[in-house]
Figure 1: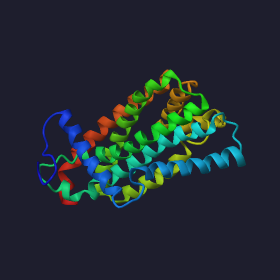
Figure 2: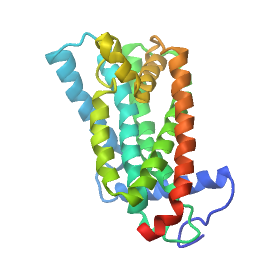
Figure 3: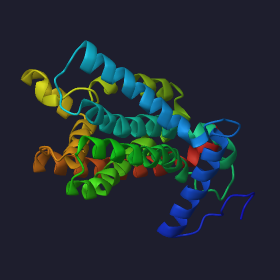
Figure 4: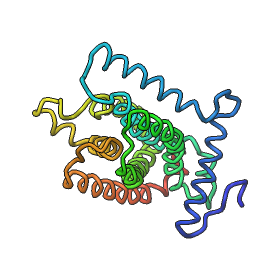
Length: 261
């Protein structure tokens, strides 16, 4: 142990152990002195779900079957992505006391930021299963869900390493990421179906890897049509490439972190 934190040791298992340890501490800190504790993120998602369902099924009916489940799947994936990437961007500056420790592996901090909102995903899944049961939409394809979660995890870690390292040198990165995520929400089919988007705009949406991932999540959960094999393979390959690039950039910029912070 080192000041209450695990000293760095080689190996994937030790890296994962450190991520779990720091994520647990962060979650406990976030929900301390709150009445609902860990359930607050789920409450926020359900509140947003209620508004979207009211607007786009009662006020402006999009004509999408099982719309509540349709939206909730998109919200779970998007909320994890947005909260995780935003948190990873500020993870180094926000944990300056850890970065300044000579032996602390600061590469773990963006991963911790991604892992913390994943707990919210785990809390939302039982609610989703209940909704699927009520709607009669429980399908065997749901066993493929961990594969998609893994692809999204790899993508988010890569983006987190890139944004987190860049934010140490340029503090505007945090604001850029915030604005980018706000815009990207509307370019991600969280509350609408890509098939209903005018064809000329669809290529723009396809540039966003979350578009394919959200569609794949819905295909797994609702047993609907999967995105093309090429699209899924492309997103998986892009996620790995972004993760590798993020790790390399992080390593390249790492020597200056202490001076900049």
